Length: 605
View (spheres, rainbow, N blue to C red):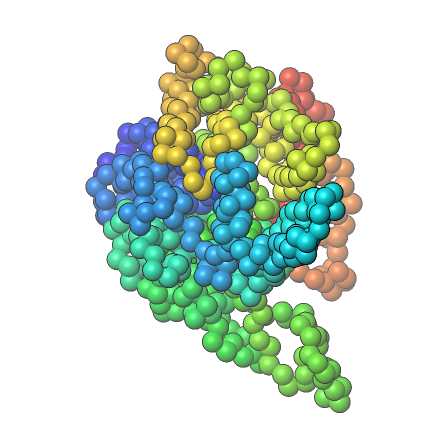
């Protein structure tokens, strides 16, 4: 398909569980004027990102669906439609709990039911045994009071009713705690994402997404769409995931060959064809020590990793979805001397025996949104060749003049800099305490992403979509009309980006917030930041020239330079020193966009 008349762009999609229904409309609208070079997402955004990548792959290669973005456009309609299996929409049935976790899942879903009476009835259906046992003391008390007369009888009845109510609530609480205790044995989650409930005819999330990726990209089930397929078609796809074992984020696909997987275990998470592909395309890994992998297999290299695997690893919302287990070897574990006995009993992470082989241990991966729910950093460069668009899904403001006006973008260089407020309640009640916990959690995981949305040259390419309390989030049972509305917001968001960056208009009127303005702001902001960085750099660099000129045999001798490098390092250092001294005059600070970002070294992830 000829895409020469389309402009290049990148797009990053935020997490938000069912709020991600906004994205099909967004990417379909953008696809009419842009081709997607790089696509990123986390959590629910990873689903949309993988579908968008598959559609762009089909458009670039001519394989698969002849109208791939039309297929994405049909997704919201299918999600909102009633499932053929009955009992709710297709969207609701994508989330199918493990049999042992079905009762806890039903308890969680009960909070989506309106009305306290219906909610209590749902609890009674789930925890009928615990409720019955909780009622017994009160019923016994009423029974024993049957022989009493007068006020004693009524006191006993009232007391019995109170005891029965308290007992039933305690029974529900005990039932919840007992079932939560099962989580560790079930990969810390309610839904695997792939395995169906016994007798279910509805598709699960992974099954549906895998089929959709194959359908759009024209891939056979035996050859799932991989990151290498996308790369060869000129499409870059990245997603985020969070490693609980190491307490850090990762960008998928992995760049290192340090992880392994269990084919048997993965058959609970992915179709057998995907697992077999991974076994057949395992990475070639060499070890410098004696190891025993058991049934673990090296994870495929980046190009051979199926997109569906990365999407599932990014989409592991805590408790709702099971964490994904990979394996790695802890090379830091101490090895005991030959005469040092092994402890009894063994504990995880203890010292290895003298001749004991190293074995892979579980490394747990959870939702990418835990560490970066809005990964704007994925494709950004100081001076971009093409725009990186992003959609920020946020709560509906109560001060909106028109509640139906859900899509907004900055209309001036000063726009988008205002803080987003989370107002905590000071009234008594459980809601205030829950609000505090939620705000604490959101602040811990979102602070970095939030700060990036305020930076000049970054904030002007973000379109904001406001959702009310009934739209998106954990609302698995949204009505079809609501799903349609979310999709429409996405289309409006895509059109808003096109209006600004291609047509130079906003609501029909000319706007200064164009692609050229975006480039100019990025240049002014980057040069001003570089000036500060180079001035600080040069202030210390002069003291490092002596290190470069030392005799190679004199310490420090780590990371040595060969002769050509040493000559080049001397010349480069002289040039940087001169440039830094020149930039220390701060000639570019006056009139630079604010707030000015900092240039800092950060670890790759």
